[in-house]
Image (cartoon, rainbow, N blue to C red):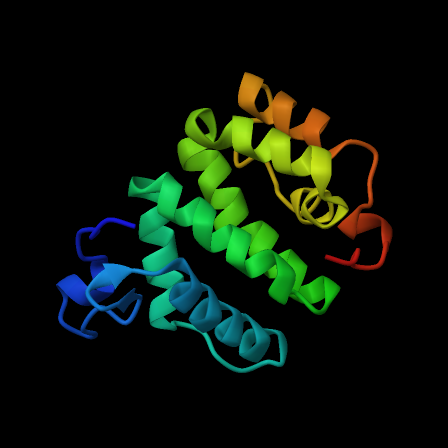
Length: 156
C-alpha cells in the first residue's frame, strides 16, 4: 500500500499515524483498531476513537484504502449490532462518497458473500435513493439476509 496523506487526526497532532506500519498505511492495523472501538461502542463505551476519523477520511478521499479496511472488518464481526455499526459507518460512507468508484467491487463481493449482503442491508441511501448507484446496491444486496428483518449474522 502507498503512503497516504495525514488524516484529520494526524493533521491536528493528536496521533502519529497509528494506522501505519513501518510508515505505510496498513488496513489490518486500522481494521483492528476500528473493530476494537466498535466492540466498545456496542457495549455502551467508546466513541471518538482515532480509527473512526481515519476511516472516515479514507472513505472520502482514498476509496481503495477504505475498501481494504472494510474487507478486514467483515470477518471480525461477531454480532448483528457490530454489523449494523459497520454498515451505517464505513460501508454507507463509501457508497455515499465514492459509490461510482466502489460499486463494481461491492457488487462482486455481494455476489459471493451472504455476510456482506447482510451488512449492505443496514446501509441507507443518504438522500440518493433515486441514483443508479443506490439501485445497484439494492440489486447487489438482493433478498437477504437482512439486518432489519431480524436475521442472524451469516458466517464468514
